[in-house]
Amino acid sequence: MPNEDVSLEKYRSTVIYSSLYSTLFRLAAPLILLELVNVSYSIVDAYWLSIWGGTSFAVPRLIRPTYMLFEAVFIALGAANLAIMSQYIGGRRFEEASKTFHQFLTISILLGSSLTIVYLVANDYMLKYVVRVPLELVDEAFGYSSVIAFDILLSGVSTSLTTAFNAIGETKIPAAAGIASALLNFFLDPLLIVGIWRIPALGSVGAALATVISRALKLVVLVALFSRRFSSIELKLTKNIERRWVHTTVKAGGPMFIRHSLNSFGIMVQYSIVNSFGVIATASYTIGFLFMDIAEAFVRGSTTPIAVIVGQNIGANNFSRARSAATRSSILLGGVTALVSIILLLFRENLVKVFTSDPSIIFESMKFLEIFLPTLPFLTIFFIGLAIGRGSGHTLAPTAITLVRMWGFRIICAYATSLVLGMGTSGLWLSISLGNIVGGIATTIWINIGRWCKPVI
Image 1 (cartoon, one colour):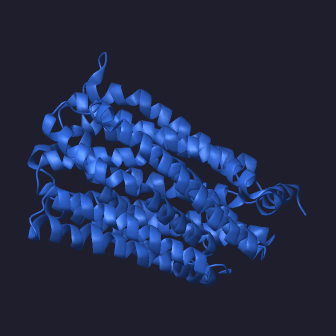
Image 2 (cartoon, helix red, strand yellow):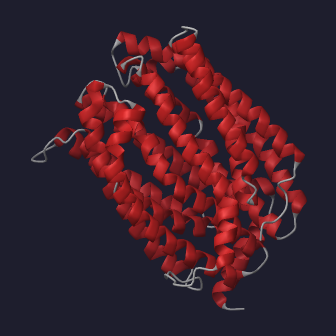
Image 3 (tube, rainbow, N blue to C red):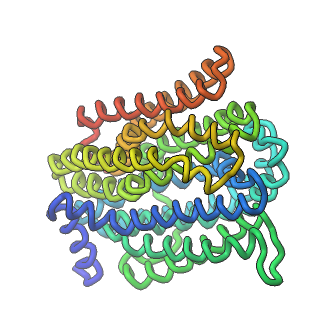
């Protein structure tokens, strides 16, 4: 066995045979730190945009669903290839893992270039006619989206590299690259948003430009470190796109693509409902989800490690450990989220006032948070279910749960309660929260049935 493959074997043995909690902590710690930095970046972004002008801090979140629609392609590819590569590595099939990565990287570059162009052409129409951006934010939203479009290509290539690192069991390097990227964003935000020295104030365009520059740095770091650390896999493109790889990727990633694309479109429709109540509701919705980002940082940092542990143990036919990882991580992370949610509830008013002094926005944000925050432990279980689907390659059930949660509760129920029944924003916030509860309960049932615990390769 080549020396480089000995390195892969070392990672594999640690994931499969070490203590479950110590393995989860080792893999998750750098990603949790990354998530906390990313949440801080989102908060800093919102803070400087609030200084730039009123409700401008809502712009990045308004653009997010249209960006997510295009990002869905790479999320699906990443989910499928994480399952494939981790299961190959778990089964010591290192050469096949390498071939998988070359095909994944090649397709990501091709699709990233194409989708960037499509986004530039189509996004203004989606913002105007689907999301229905409030008139006060239209110009800033269009300016932000015209710059952030170039992040689609960067995100696609970064996803392929990050997926390969994570499938191997090396989470520190992509986390370190992400942290460096976020820190650069911290530095660039005040320079480009409000302007300092001779740099002109660019507002929301500056926020998007800061993001694109920092993501480009992240990609450069990932390329350099992957080439040095895992030379046996090789960082190269290929003309040989195998039918078997396409079939497995579509089978494992197809449901994830459907889930994320319909989810992103659903968020657009939901924003349309929220925006119909005016810019106060839009700002309150944005603040509420900033709170969610804080509470869920530990969970999002742990989902990829859970997927890797599940995938490699299934690949090694160690099914009991895969099931144990699923149930024990659900209990642990659900408890952590509950604790953080309680803390945020206690300090919600002071935190809301960081972003706005408008009494109407403060009142509406408080109402949303009082309904929404207690349901976050259920949302945690739902996210863990998605991670288990990614690691096992069995993504159909999590996709179905996602669609019911999004379209059944956050769209149909929200429309019925807020507009048809005349409950206004109270019905909207209640429907979103009910979706979290139902999604968490359905995911718990699916995890415990255990039919996902079998390989896809």
